[in-house]
Image 1: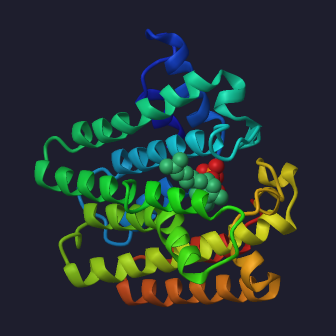
Image 2: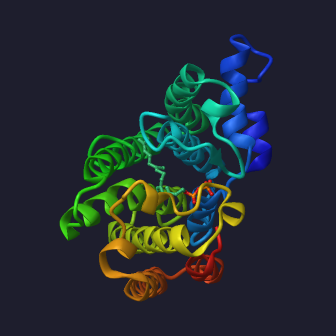
Image 3: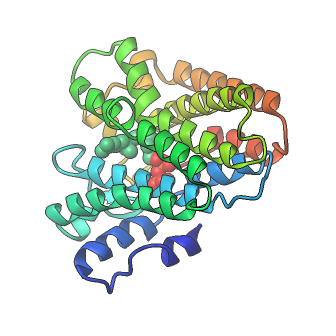
Length: 281
Ligand code: GRG
């Protein structure tokens, strides 16, 4: 993945250099690469003949754009991301906006080019990624998250935000990887993978909420206690630490049991799901 993040991106030396530098900066500065690993591991459940790397790269590109824009002064106004200055701090606000903007079409270009010999599948992947990152999912979740700041917690809003801002991209990662594999046409299995991805995404967000209050800025590579300061609606604010931890465990358990129903070569993914519950950043 790291190799492709170097070889498959516009070079920083290409004009406009500042824009390409900023795009490369945010993509290479770090990050767990969780979503691309989910794409690759989901493909490995029932491997086929197609290369899942392009889909994995596209998902990480969209995720990175969303982080760049989320960090902007108009949104979370964060100084630190992936252990380094945020894009607008390392460059400037206009460059960060444009870097995020340019990453969106790049992701779709990576898919269109990578799967040009399997156009039908390529179109399905474009559609899944566009849907997961669009106004009803990622961007919609972000909108409701911003609208909810400072308001008293409501379960309906919290569920909407978590399902769409966070879980949709995690779910899409698993589904895209699976669809590239040899059982990628099996609707029943796709539905199970979707369910596992949704549960995993909700568990991921519950852990994210917990880490915001239990971890440090150094460990997280982003500002700790940020949710509290911004008066964000989180599980911790809503039900407290203990119950938020229980929720994370329940969602993880659901993801694990659904994954077992999917079958295939799942030991790595099972370990990854469990690690995600124990993660420290
Ligand atoms: C600006 C459209 C738009 C959306 C922003 C990414 C995002 C939505 C908000 C970031 C804030 C946040 C806590 C989101 C939920 C969880 C999440 C996506 C965390 C970041 O993902 P990680 O931990 O990050 O996988 P790395 O850096 O490891 O890739």
